[in-house]
Image (cartoon, rainbow over all chains, first blue to last red):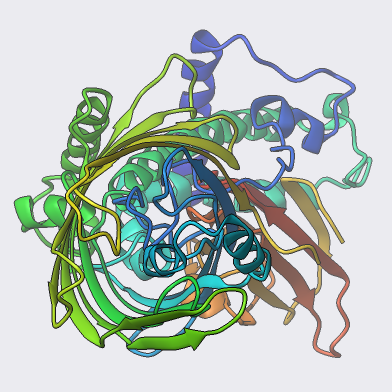
Length: 456
Length: 116
C-alpha cells in the first residue's frame, strides 16, 4: 500500500513536472545519462580559498586587517612604503590545526621588514656618510624580523570554520528538504526493485532508456527532476549559512617576538589579545530566534512542536545580511590590547665610527581599534575592502620615546581568488623611536597571495 | 575509483554492508549520507560518523538508494568521500570515491542499489 502511494506521488509529480519543464531523456540514453540531463555532474573546479577578502595579513603592521584569516593554509604578502614605517615588509602566514580547547587553529606568521639603521645610531654617527654606508651594508635581510604565534579557538560561537556547525546545518537542511529527499530516495529504492524484476532484457548500467519499462522510466525522470529542485534548495541554504558563518566573531591571543640587529633597534616581546565582532552573524541569528537551536529544529522536523519553520527565518535573516553587506553594513570591528616589553639596547663602536648607543628597558601598552567593511564591485567575488585603524602606544620607562598614535585607511582590492592588492594611507604622530613631533604620513602599496593548499 | 554523480550498483548480495568514510586536506568541511530502503527504513551518517570512519550499515535483500553530500568550508579544502559495498566474505564488489572543492560548493551524489 505504501509503495503504491509512493508511486502515485511520483506519477503526480511526473505530470506536474512534464508541464513545468521541457527537459526530457532521449531514447538512447542510459539511466545515468538521463539523470545527468537534469543533474549535471559538477566539474572539479580549481581549488580556491575563501571568497571573503581578508585584507592585509600582517598582525603587527599598522594597516593589518580587522578580519584575521584563520582559514587559508598559507599566505604571503609584500608591501612597500614611501616613508619609513615598516618599509618594505614581507609577511609569511600559515595556519595549522591545533586542538587545545575544542578545535582551534594556530597561526604562525613572520614579517621580514627591510632593516634600516636606528635613529639613535645615525644621530650618534652624525655626518659621516662612509660610516653610515658601511653600517648599512653590514645589515642582512633577517636583521629585522617579527615572528608570532596566534591561537584562535574554533567552536560553535567563535571562528569561521564550518565543522562545529555540522548539527545545525544538517538540521536546517533536513528541515528544508529532508522529507522530500527521503521520499525521492525511497522512490529510487522502489525503482531498484522494479528494475531487478525486469528480466527481458535484464537491466544493466548500459540498458537504454527506450528498453526500460515505461513506469520505471517515468519514475526515474520524476526523481531526477525532484533531485534538481532539492539540490537547488539545499544550495541556497548552504549559501545563506556561508554568509552568516563568515560574520562569526573571532577571539585570538598572540605571542609576538620582534628580533632586531642592535644597529636597527632593541628586541621586543609582546602578548596581544584581539576580539573581532561582526553584524549579521550566525550567533546573532540564534540569539534573535531563540526557538531555532539544533534541538528545536530537530523537534520541529519530527513534528514534536509547532510547524514554524526556522529555515524561512534563517533564509530571511541571511537575505538581510546579504543586502546589508551590499550596503557596506556587514562590517567587522576588531579591538585589541597588547602588552609589549622592549629590551635595553646598549653598545659601543670604535669602527667605522666611535659611537655609544644606550636605550633603556621599557614597556608599553598598545590599544588598537580596527573597523573593516566589504565593498561590492561590479565583478562577482571580487569585492573590495575598506579598513580604518587607530593604534595608541602608551610607553613607560623610556624618556627617549613618546606615546605614539597611528591611524590608517586601507583599501584592499581582490584581483583573483588568491591575489589581493592593498593600498594604505598611514599617519603617525612620530616614528617609533623619534622624540620629535614631526608628523609622518605614508602611502603603502602591496600584493598578498593565498596558497589554496599544499601540493600533495 | 572516481565515479559519476549517479551510480547504479547492481547486484547487491544479501547481508552485504554499505560502508563509507571521508577525509579532507583540512578539517573545514562537512559530509553526510542518507540511506533509504524500499521499505522506508532510513539511516543517516554525519561528519562525525564518516571522519575518519568507516561508518557502515547492513543491507537486507531489498532495493536501496543513498544520497551523499560533500560541503567544503571557507578554506576550500579538497574533500574526499569513499563509499563501498562489503560482502560477508570481505570482498568489495563496488567501491567509489568522489572529491569536492570550492568554498561552500555542495556536491551531491546518488547511488541506487539493486538487490541480487
